[in-house]
Image (cartoon, rainbow, N blue to C red):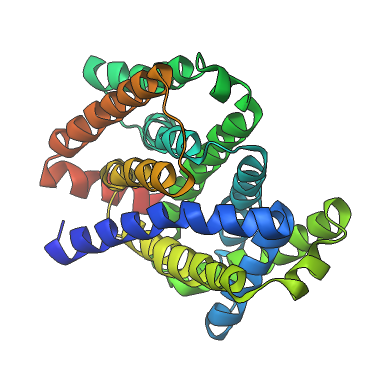
Length: 300
């Protein structure tokens, strides 16, 4: 990977880590569906100049947009609205790496050995250990929704790899376009007072909305889509490892989250499992192997 691309993904990690505060503030002020809807309205307005039909690729674009937009973000917003322990959500978000690996095995023919299998198993075991913390167990619905949204992120990452050659800004313009009406319907149905709260929201809420839309979605997600068109999922997904760790630290500091023994042990086991997957994914592939996998994926 080129040094500039590595630096870019690390910058994206930082943007996404800070986004936990943005999302929590937005959701608490406006509600999950209203907050995500307004976020995508901003994304759509920014990306509208790139909105155009892509011959022969619209089916994949629309499906990827629904999965990575309305479903992924909607589930994520709901999880934040149901959970006070934002740090736990950040740790659960690490499961995106093993989920991506599992999907790569199923759909890309990736071969893994026992070390990465053990790392993947440890990632899930760590989340189970965290569940022994009574405070986190009480918020199991929110954590479960985060796990489900993380799986949607992994599915979306795989689908974005199939859109090689399509401008990422065009992809995310369509993502926003297909997500906005779905999220608007959900907001009007489940949060009838959400728009009134948005109209009365103060500047800091709108500031966080701009950060989430431009910093996390456009710079972060569009940037990740651009990188996924150039590198395999098994190379890219491990490099998102710093995000949940930084996010958990930020959440603990900002929201003064209490830390239990079960939380620490579960987080360590999960992090170690993901680290094993990360290390093996980084060392398993030779440059020749990456080229072969890339060529095989382009033919699909």
